[in-house]
Length: 149
Image (cartoon, rainbow, N blue to C red; front, top):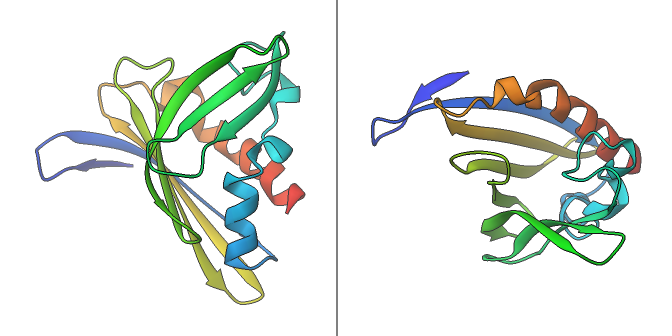
C-alpha cells in the first residue's frame, strides 16, 4: 500500500495482522520483553550476521534499542523505540540496511478470546522496503510469534 503523509512524503506500507489466545498484556510482554524467545535468528534469514547471531532484543522504553547480540557478545543496533505504551502500542525504527530509517508500529487490541496484533512497517517510497522481502518476511516472522504464543 502507498499513501501520502501530511508533509507530502509518499510512503510504502506493509500491514499484517495475527490473533493469539493471550491477554493483551501477555501478548505485548511476549512481543517486546521476550522477543528473543520467538524471533527466528536460528533460521539465518532474519539477522544481520547469520554465522554469529544469538539473540534479538527490543528495549521496553522510549529511546530503547532494537538490536541483535552475537555469540561473541558484540551488539548490532537495528533501530530505536519511538513510542512505548504498554500494553497497547510500540513503535520502533528499523534503520539498519536502509538509507532512511523505516518504522515498525505494532498495536495490541483485545479481541474475542485473545488479542489481535496489527503490525505496520512503513518507509518513504524511495526506500525499497518491498524489494527487501519484508512483505513475505513478516508473514514468516509473525508465524514464529504466533507459535510461541
